[in-house]
Amino acid sequence: MTQDELLLGHAQMQADIAEQIGIPPHEVEPQESLVDLGLDSIQVMTLLMKWGEKIEGLDFSRFMEAETLEEWWAIAEAAQTGPAAGKAAVR
Image (cartoon, rainbow, N blue to C red):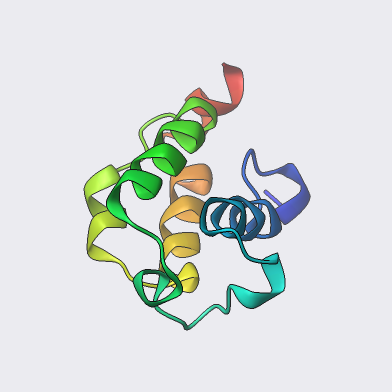
């Protein structure tokens, strides 16, 4: 599955995070702590609910343990390309 075929792409994830924080997407650097950028727990849950509508089986607890866009992207990408990904695409 290519980046273009994913239900949630890296650029969209970055834009969604930036929108929640109120900054331009390019300011959400892959290695920077999202908490340090100003993302709070309510905003995290808002994002996870939005993304959970697109990606079945998204493990919210893994996101709570991760700190950066790069780590979040790895979780989302794995959820979309792993064994359960076929079910999510059918929705």
